Image (cartoon, rainbow, N blue to C red; front, side):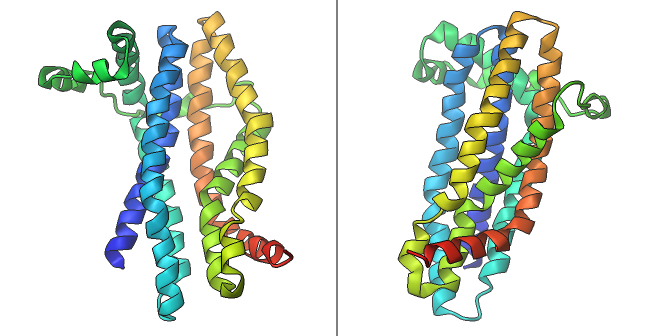
Length: 264
């Protein structure tokens, strides 16, 4: 089971790193002036995250099955380790953000020339992989100092943090609730929407439109590009804070799902 938990944590790191690095694809599209092409690359990032999620889900469910059969298995601590892995993945993405903006800027240009993602991947050579090292960039203290609000609403960042926290624990709290209430296992296991639904509403109404507005402004005015980069930097930090907040919300969300599911 220790190996199972390790695999789940590694997949969680990959999922959250990929989702956070999707900001670098959008920013690369703005920098190159080819946002639509960049968004097609963002789809590849989403595909990586969803594929990892497909592998992670049954493994995480297996942990619940093990806990139901073995009372000595510490399910809560294991699930909290998975939440902790989401913080690690987000932190890795923050460190890689400057490098991936440069790499994806090149990838966007090559994708436009190649015409499709298969042709783009087919054109990758060992020499090109070696030359990619020249685009790597370490985060610096000056980058961190530049991450000031400068007109970016605090409410926007708090909402992004909240949405990340909810998404991080949506499925995990449902699984833990099904463990605490095995008599309602099936109904509870299908109730993750009680948590994730709120995050979807907040994301659709408040966050996505703001990101789109700032992106369009950066495309129209080169002076806004630097501000967009700061916004993405602050959004990544708020995502990291969201994964930490998820630890505090884990048990309340579990109790919420268990209470509501038992009403049906």
